[in-house]
Each structure stands twice: as structure tokens, then as C-alpha cells.
Length: 202
Image 1 (cartoon, helix red, strand yellow):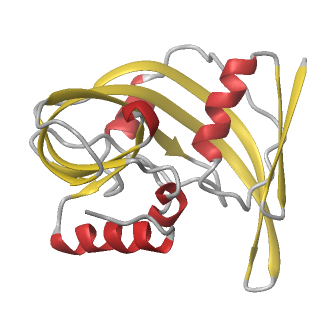
Image 2 (cartoon, helix red, strand yellow; image 1 turned 30 degrees about the vertical axis):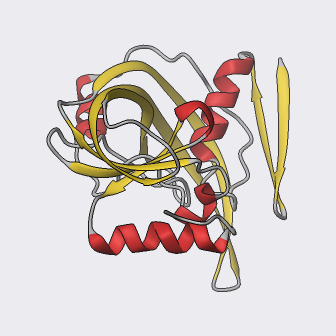
């Protein structure tokens, strides 16, 4: 049995599980909600049921990941505009139960629930480089989507729809950080987030 403890801002998150790599995967899914206290996780669960797969496939209006632009800006090296050339291909699936607590309106709320996460791989055609250096090419992007049944807890996300125009925020070595819809408002929001992190946008 291994215990992993992470301290983010003023919150302490603890995972207890047998599989170190699985704990780290679940940790990354929950990182966007730093006000959570996570005390247990179960990884490598049996294949998801048809109902669970349907939940994952149901559009949420939020693309991967649910972290804010300000949160990912510090690690952003490249920003591109790209079009999803096809649907996301589903890969490994994980599930876990979390216990959470959050302060809302001065009240401490205790809760929790199940989280289901699925690895995805999707091809995009890069059409424009908005920040950093990149090539206008077709590239495969790997990310994960989450169906959260926890409250308070991480927000659910769904794959980028085939044919959708997206803004992709990428980190070191082109690693995926976040995808949002390509709109003038979102382009400005990305520039503002990068500027706040003292990164000069293109």
C-alpha cells in the first residue's frame, strides 16, 4: 500500500492506493479542484459499462481539461488553432472514489463520489500558430476526459467533437494542457492569461 500526499496552496490532498502510476493519473484529473481533500482511490477498475460509456460520450460543453486558463498558463509553451479531423479514439479507462471538502459561502461542505476517466487520442490539423513555435501540420494529441459524479468535485469534460475548431494549449515537448473552442473571445482570454503569467503572447 502506498500513500501519496500533495500540498497545493493551503490544501492537502492524500491518495491511498496500490498502484503508484494510477494514483498519479487520478491526481492529475483532480488537480483542477485544489479545494478537494482526496483520501482514497481505486484504479484499473473493470471495463466501463454501456451506461458509463454513454455518460463519458455525452457532451458537457467543456473540453479537456477543466483547469482554468490561468492555471495552465505557467506551463504553456505553444498555442495553436487547430481543427479536429476526426472523432477521439478511446483508450485506457480508470475509475475512483474520492472524498472531498470545500468551503462555499463560509460553510464547509463535505462530499465526494465516483470519478471515471478515459484516455483519448485525437488527430488535429494545425491551421495557425498563436503563440510560440509550431508547424502547420496534422498532429495526434493525447488527453483524457472525465465524468464526475462527485460533489463537490472535479467538473466533467467530453472529447472535442469531430470537425470542431479548437485552441490547443501545449506544454513542454508538445504535451497537451487544455483545449477550448476557437472564438475571438477565447483567443483574447488566452492572450490575457499568458500576459498575467508574464509570458509575451504572439
